[in-house]
Image (cartoon, rainbow, N blue to C red; front, side, top):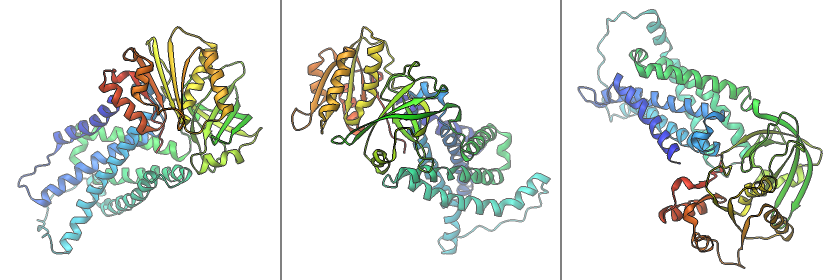
Length: 443
């Protein structure tokens, strides 16, 4: 999280510094209209840089995953940058459009323009002819962006609508690149901020076209067939086993993949609940009916159906040198730990592992399978059933694992519960780097 926050800060600070080397937010004489002119430039430049990075991160770049500790954190950064670009866009729009309204309302008096005898070059003259069109393009692109942002943030809107509408961002971005090229102050292009703008817009545009042509993650996609389905009605859980083709290169326990069973619906992210064995090439997903899509899976998925799998992604892979591990799986958050125990059964190690699992609706068959996995992997299970046992808490974990300060903790489950556990353990002396939490939230 520290790296994500640091990166977010640097993405804002570095372009700001470069822009200030080329211009100022304190023009002389300092008047509303003088400030408006420079602020429109600053907000527009910073917003398009943020949007460029948003487009690049949308490609799910694997090479930066280790730095951010997983693509789940990259998606978090993607979301923060998108919201920041939107807020900058609102300010940019208001100073550009709102000022004209305030002049019309009589709140502001527009300064008188002095005629310019400057002879424009060919490029500058052409840019001037494009000004009106680029302003209109930018304005309408902004309005579309507002709608798309609300679709992205309102979680009651079905996920497949979010995925489909999100692709329109690529067109909006390309329109805003045109808007930026035409309306950015000519003098910036010979400054460091101009070079940064060019680089960001080139890579952002490439990313936009990759998105438009549906090529994101193509090199990491494999075909698979459903070979088994097991339903646990009491838990509203469906266990799906796939047989993958030879293009799947394997995965680590704890990672996740995007699965497409219906192209109209689009892909959905699922944590992988099995270790990889290149001899049988099978992969298991455990999904809980939490929304409209997952609730329909038990009716739409059939044995023999072909699906597409993209991945693997994520760094929630239990990879550190600590001899003591504490695993906490709350509810459906048990999934990556099932994969981990499956892996430990095949590849035992000398770590001492305590696995805490809390559930509100126990299913006898599911729990028996879990206990069997625990037994075969030599893991210490601590099971907490709501309304029967006391509530799982950091205090209880500390009581059952006295030397917890020397452990690494791996948590998967509801975000708020994880944040609460993290805060308590860290405030009690745990190194923040030793608390690993999967932020499995894609919007």
